[in-house]
Length: 357
Image: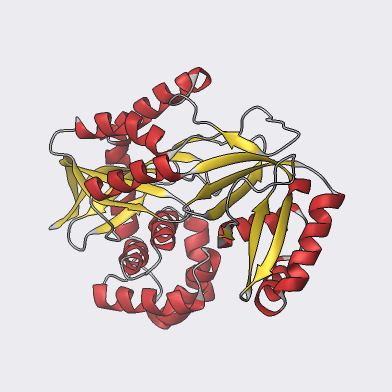
């Protein structure tokens, strides 16, 4: 499992961001981009034509969301941003005015971090932490193995050492849970079971049993831009989801579910791979599960080092490689991909074996 920061460090940053972030409902004609110093900044105007805040830098996430909303192809958008920021500002300002819309602008530390629909339902990291941490903390001997806040998501990964089993002699796995949330429109609130392999500290996310809550709510409208004040923690309309979150956290470390996953691992341990062309097989599997060519080489390396030429060994090579990835978001995706490989249908595994021959 990719190492992150401590729970206390994460909570400190969550609280800091909660106090520092400001959200606005924006009528797009009151937005204007201006090039400066080889980049572009976002200006926000009120009804009098004054700027209530300093110009904002724009995160890569917000840039992509602006481009998507205004139907500017990503390749062209990125080229203008890099080579002709004046042209980018001119293009976007034209479309802001020509196609007026209501948008939610999320800001933090002087940066526009997200440009979202006015139907976006804010379920923030602090809200989620307040709901799930008391439940996670009540697990006997709960171990917070990895926490992190990236530009796109918050992650809490917890292991329950009291619920463990052997896949093979000496290969012990423990049950856990992953809680994640995106405040910038890149994913639902998500709670998923986690399998933690002690022999190499691998984390595998069970991506077929999860609870989600989409960030979609009522439409907010405004003639002008204005600050959105914080809601009460998970408003009344979300109480049902709070209960579902709590139930899912508990179910994620359910013994029966954990046993089913362990049995799947044992079956995968018996699914031998065709050793006639191991690099070719790994390349085929990587392509099917959206592992890049450069990542494929490292997965192959870990497969050989692990000396387990089975479907189980291949899935563990992917999750072991996730620990080497610098980007925490991508590492978490690879933990989920490892489980997808582990549970691929027998027909698909047979086809990959045959094609690699």
